[in-house]
Image (tube, rainbow, N blue to C red):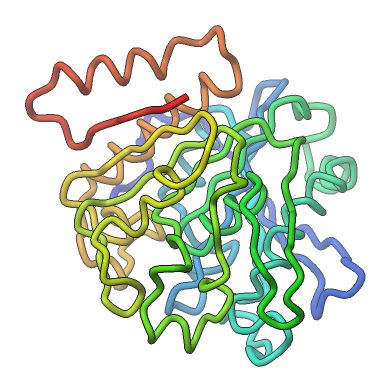
Length: 312
């Protein structure tokens, strides 16, 4: 796995920040990482995947992303969602093992409590730019981002349509998200009922969807392009980054030396996070030309590690 670049600016991390949330089984625990110096920091909420690991799917995971974006000037906020195996909560509650709706509510609650977060983390007070909030999620975290972007889910328990769109978020990135519920395989339909109730017709907010072209699993869908549905089946301005040779962990984004990585590649991790960085810079500041420059560079590069397509 890639290690933090030695020349990177110093980053300060603080955990846990504890936010009581009414109705949640446990308090919401966060890790905050930010550059040691600088003001007007854009905020990046990072949603972990469901995964098979105990601690990678918590605020302790995704170091290759969190460390990188903090060094690039973001205040990175990582919650531990209730589906994390680190918490050991009962997976048979009304939300099922994925705790799907509370994941999105976690992110909204963090935004509500930014004043408390600033006051709790030493040296962070007055440094956050609340007008620039981005959210990035991997796998089930991508489902969380999709909900915040307007994707609708029919609650399999009561049949009610759930709308958790969050307009305070400016930029959205979905890494290897679940696809349309209509094409869900029998295994996932049995074990993760809510994924069968997922539709993208109302996900109109702008977003970047990132998928690996080797990320296929018959346990989730027979379609090879299933994880790109958030791009192909949603309206509005979207871009799709297809990572060549990428499997579900996209080279190893979930942790340093992560055993769950099936396509370990430091170069692939670097490509994903640097390309996503270009998207975030432009999405948070339309005067920034990073995204257009990146698209043009990939189009010219015969050895590019991926391709970008966009729609309005």
